[in-house]
Structure formats: structure tokens, C-alpha cells
Amino acid sequence: MKVAVAKEDNIVAEHFGHCREYVLFTVEDGRITGEETLTAPEHAPGVIPRFLNEKGANVVLAGGMGQGAINLFNEMGITVFIGVCGSIDAAIKSYIEGTLLSGQNVCDH
Image (cartoon, rainbow, N blue to C red; front, side, top):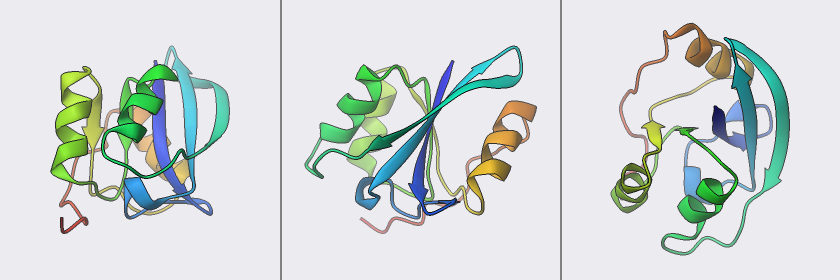
């Protein structure tokens, strides 16, 4: 399984489509077996969901994102967690432990 996290420094970015990087974690048997930092492609409708899908993402974690991106991920079978905040390490750990919940979308459009 691959989990993409919107990255701003070492924290989960508030807006998935405006961050410069994503961290793509490979998770197997409840542990991280790989980690890759991806430079974000241009911010245009549908580009980033397709990009992360092509990279094999099964799950996306972000502070917030627009409904159009959420719909595209859902159509691709990719699970979206929004309202995620704090450190990337804490977020991925919480996801692996099964305690991460989607919260309020911090994106207002």
C-alpha cells in the first residue's frame, strides 16, 4: 500500500493542491518499508490526483482539498483523509495504527 501525504516542511500541508511536495510512504505489514519525496506537478484541475494515482497511491492525507479533487480520488479508488494536521511522522503513524480519522476540511473552496 502507498500513502501520499501533502508536505509542507515536516508537517501535513493545509492545502493538498498548493504544496510543493508529497511524501509517498510504502506500508507493508503495518510498517513503513519505503519513503519517497515527490515534487508536485503544476496545480491545475485533475493533474495532481492523476499524478499520485500514477505513482501508485492508495491513500492521501492532507489538511484539506477541494471537492473536485476528492471526487477524482474517489473515482480512482483512492481513500482520502482530510483535516489531518501536525507532523507527517505522527500522521503516518496514526494511519498505520488505524487511529487516523478524517476531520474538518481546512480548504474553503
